[in-house]
Image 1: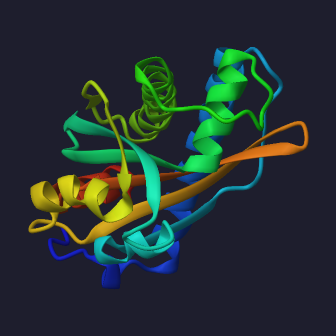
Image 2: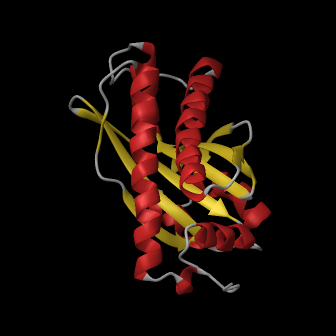
Length: 207
């Protein structure tokens, strides 16, 4: 078994397999979101890549960009975190869809709005992890989600402190869900520790 897999060891075949996981997970997430909202939700082909953890804040518009982050711990055969991150425009739009408001209505993120976003993040992350579990036959469990509305750098500090020393590999999946003419863009980041990343690739038969 190869024991030194890192971002520099990802070849095109690994990436193709990881993209397929992202595509299947995104499709399941779109289906879950449509059921939750009881609306017709379309999904654009997700953008998927493997990246360094240190580059994540740049993807989100910089460390000082204000975002909504839903963070779930991952346990079982895979250990790490999964994050669902929305910019404020997409977060407001999603809450307005959930609550039946006009999509451009200004809202404050109070406890009710935060709870709604937390539940959406929980459902979408669960759809991804369920897809990953089915494809790999690994036991993958998510913890109760936490939510924060803060600068991207502050939100990312939580998984960075916990896993940054053990892993520098992040599976990044950018999703764009569309509802009529409007869209909600959400970024998923799967941050496994190094041992889990190796276990994941082995389960997929590509390590």
